[in-house]
Length: 159
Image (cartoon, rainbow, N blue to C red):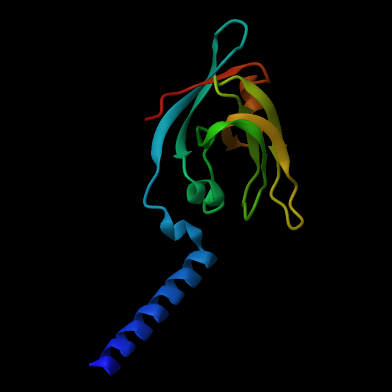
């Protein structure tokens, strides 16, 4: 009986180790699905709509770490919205990315504080810094094409 219990414990330990190694190599395995929403960009002075994009919502640490790195291509009308608990200084990198992005930082009320155009790169990674509670990633050049600048706002509804 004791030998069987030890065998089961050893098997459980081995399975746990294999799962941990798999997740370390590909944390996207923990992601079951994303909530989606529409983000509209609004001119900060006139409230005119500048454009909208359908986004996946990255609202937890694993989804935020993986980001768009497991995405091969991103249509012009798609993106990802990173939702943090508070507005703070943040830094984003282009880890394992196949395409360029605009990285748009916005504070708690949606006001855009910074926009960076970022290209995929090797190591060491460039840190794109900004202050915000929200970070919108869209295809590189999207902000220019839609006339989006700091001071404009992101408008969206998330659950």
